[in-house]
Length: 313
Image (tube, rainbow, N blue to C red):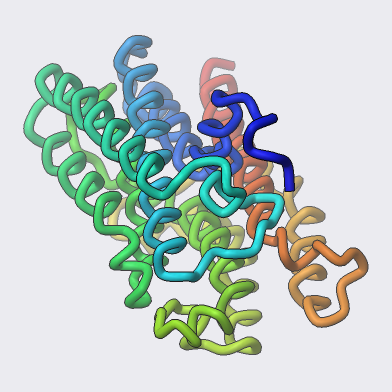
């Protein structure tokens, strides 16, 4: 492990933010904004978009840091992995990271209040719910509600909030269309909890992975991984299955099949968890899943803009 004194202060805090996880929260903002402009016919507002993006980054980092503090104090995180935060590495104390988290929550809330003042009451409800989930995320995670928390905060609410910032109106489209991406965010968390399920049970922490056990966790991971693609296919080919006809996705979303080889690779890693080809394959499955989520989100966003181009032809 790198000596704390030799590590620049900026690097310590960057690691504390866990930047590798940020695409999980930022992609819904980019996707929701794209939907608002292309599908919602909103005039793109650059400054509100940037503020929404920065606000999400700040609040996600704050939640990550607070979670690290509670996990360390509870004895859950003691071994250093490639995706570990600064506390486990011995670079920052739990008290320092807790203070940093509080500062980031205040900054994020301030950004949210500004956007609410410019946007309206709908964003207030979305923002208040998202902030509450972020603050109490660790408690939710310890009682098998972490999956639901990230599904909402770093999936549906992020996309819906970005839509409202641009359109100033509520719509079910960003909620329904972001479900596949939200499923993959859950897959990231599940991969992490699956790896730690034995130590979590020993310390009386209940996660979905701990409840399902090893074989159940494999099935659940596969459901999240491939179910996200199935959901998109359903919205393309079975438009009457959803409540609103306007929720049907355009065929351009078939571009997500380009991500299938990566999904199959992740599935192979998960299946070989007891005899991995590389020692770290299962240990860093959460980070690999986060990279896949980024690819999937970029393809979904590209599909929105391809629809825009096709509609202009």
